[in-house]
Amino acid sequence: MNMQTEKHTHKHHGKSSRGVLDANRILESIGLENGDKFLDAGCGDGYISLAASKIVKSSGRVYALDAYEPSLDSLRKEASQNEITNMEVIQADMTVGIPLDDDLVDKCVMVNVLHGFASEKTLIPVLTEIKRILKPGGTFAVVEFDKVEGPPGPSFDVRLSPEDVELILEEHGFTIGGTEEVGRYHYLVESVKKEL
Image (cartoon, rainbow, N blue to C red; front, side, top):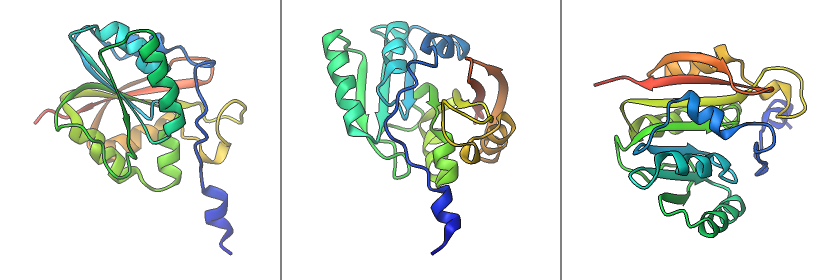
């Protein structure tokens, strides 16, 4: 049995970052505005999508995407209870594809998800899709746990440093805009899809 693959298999358990991360701080940091089309890539229970829906208002659109159906069910329920009409909840596996049009999205965030794709070696299909759906000049922000021993967060061996994330994004054709702390345990790396 290969212990190497055993050790590095990372599984997402549908946990929420709601308690440790302020959605509005992230959205403010990326400059989300009224009328923007916004993708929450790996939205989990969608607390960032819910906050984004208030910012983009009726002229904007929020796409809340995740592979984990139980989280999406609770988001659909919350969106319906709050009469949110500018949000589309999408169940999809980003390693297979994102069911959105090319050059559609102004801003995209991926919170506590990239390390999973990195450890599973599925970065190429995922980041190719993110780049495809972003408008030229569109923002892609990655939020990850600081690379320190937890808890909270994933095990140290799958965590990414800001430098790791910057390198990954540059390798996949994004231009780095900057890195900042966005919470007690988190940093955000902002990048831009190069203009054509």
